Amino acid sequence: MSANGIRPMGVMLATLLIQLSTPVFAQTECLEFRDPEVMLSTTDRWRVFVAERDVNRILDWIVGVTPPPKVVRREVVQQTRCLLNALSHSDVPLTEVPQVYSGRRSFTRQQSIWMRKYNFSGGAFDRISETARNLCGDGLPAESARWQPHMASHRQCWLGEGGVGRSLDSNQRQRETLQATAMPGLSRHHWATDIDILDPYLNPASWENAGPYVGAYRWLRQHAGSHGFVQPYRHSQVNPWFIRIEEGWHWSYYPVASVLQAFARQHPQALAKRLAELWGDNESYSFVRDGIGVTAVLAKD
Image (tube, rainbow, N blue to C red; front, side, top):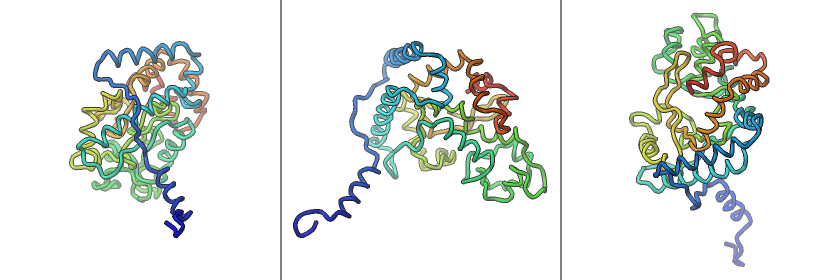
């Protein structure tokens, strides 16, 4: 405070920046889903909402080329605040205020995430599968749990750099990436119903054993449902084509997400046609586009 009782401009700006950067979980009108009838009626409300709209507009929402309706985002944001506010006031020990690290993503944003991994750049990601370990053998040290694009041995396995030993082909690289990242157009994050919370690094090990988010994960499994959220990727999901790892950080607002998932399954050919237009002949989508097909992903996701 200055001598004349007015705060210096620098202090005022610093205070404003702190206020803008700090997550605020104001009390809002929270929907409670402890009664199954509330979940059914809310889901039915969104089913009617989707059914009354043009099929192509819903498909463009699902594949991430157009933003979701504002009423969807408003309800999901409200319920997300209610969920994180409840977690922050629980007896779970937290090192920081719980927050969302990733919410709605456009097709273009998801494409950049997919291509970064496919082209093997940036930071560590996902988890090395047993298939990759068996293929590359000693090229992948046992202590390496995640893919590390900066490591020469990992680059040899992923890209074949160095010309020594075996490496993954394009389809195998896609299957590794599919463990925790959907292809653009097939991500639930397009819908504005899904959130990644607490863990900025999305590290599976942090949610297991003595990891820092084990307590929060236990609380979420017990209480997220009362706010309308479910965990879409719980336990390692094995199917004939790839393994989907458990994502303790990923939660989905069921009343809207379940309706969109059902819509996509009811319109597989229209969805496949829209994705073919978006994907073109890009090699990095060949595993789904030319191999197992969109309907197979919809059936298993």
